[in-house]
Image 1 (cartoon, rainbow, N blue to C red):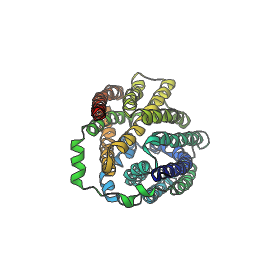
Image 2 (image 1 turned 90 degrees about the vertical axis):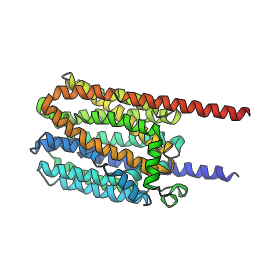
Image 3 (image 1 turned 180 degrees about the vertical axis):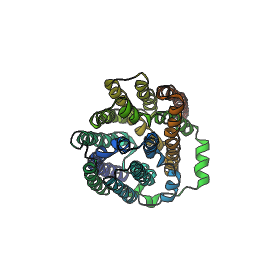
Image 4 (image 1 turned 120 degrees about the horizontal axis):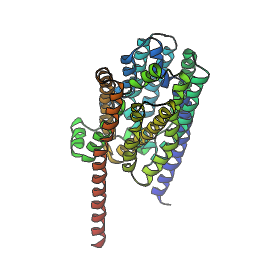
Length: 411
C-alpha cells in the first residue's frame, strides 16, 4: 500500500471529522451572534448615544485587528485551538456584562473589548483553517461552515427582533450561554500532526517584511481590499443613524435588514467556495468589489425599506466573497509566512477599521449624509483597479508556469 496515499486518506478523514465539529459549533455561535451583535449600535443610540458611539462600534470589529501582526508573532508557536478557545471564551463575558447596563458608553467599551479579545486569536484561526482543511476542499468546507452559521444567525436575529423586542438584557444573557457552548464545541477540533504548531517554523521580522516587499501580488491584494473596505466602512456610522432617526425603523425592521445580509451570504458562500476551489480567488474578488458598492448606492438615492433590504443583500454577497477570497489566497500563497501575512493583512484591517468610521463622521458633519454615501459608492468602485491588475499578474504567472512546463516536457 502506498504510504502517501494512506496519509492522504487519513488527512481527508480527519478533515471531515473537523468539519462536523466546525459546523456544529458554527450553528450555536451563529445564534449567539444573531441575538446581540446586529443591535449594538442601535442599543447605544437608544441608551442615549450619538454618531461617535455608532462610529466606534462600527470600527470595533476591524480595529480589534490593529495589533494582529504582533499577535501573530507572539502566538505563532501556541496551540491554535486552545488559543482560540481562551480568547473567544473571554470575549463572551463582555456580552454577559452588556446585559446589566443601560449606558451607551459602557456598551461601546464592552463592544471594543469583545472584538479585541477575539482579534488576538484571528491570525491563529487563519493558520488553523489551512492545517485542518486541504487546499482542494478548503473553500468548499469553509463555505459549509459559514452557511450553517449564517442560517442560525438568521434565527438569532429573528428571535431578537420578534421575541426580545425591548428585552435586550434577556437576549444578551441567552447569547452568552450559547456562546460558551459554541466555543466549547469548537475546542474539540484537532489539527493533523503534520501541520500542528509543533512543526511550525518561526519566521523573523526581517524575513516577513522581505517576503511582503517582494510579493507584488500580495501588495495588490492588500491595496484592493484596503480601498474597498475603507470606503465600505466610511458611512458605517451613518447607517444606524439613518435607520433610527431618518426612517424611524423598529428593531424588527432593522433585524430584517441584517437578515438580508446574512441570508445572501449563506446563499453565496458555497458558490464562492466552489469557484475558489475550481478556479481561483480572482473572479470572486472582482465580482464582490462591484456588488458591494450597491450598499451605499441605495442609501444615496433616498431609499425605501425595500431598497435598504436589497442593498443589504448585495453587501452580504460581497462580504461572503471577500471573506473566503482573502483567507484562501493567503493560505495558498503565503507558504511559511502564513501567520505573518495574515497578521499584516489583519493589521491593515485594523487601520482602516479605526480611520474609516471616524472619517465618515467628520465627512457627514461637513458634507452631509447624502454626499457621504455618494463618495463611498464611487470610491469603492476604484478598488477594481488593483484587483484587475492582480488578475493580469496572476494570468501572466500562470502562462509563464505553463510555458516552462511545456518546455521541460519537450526537452
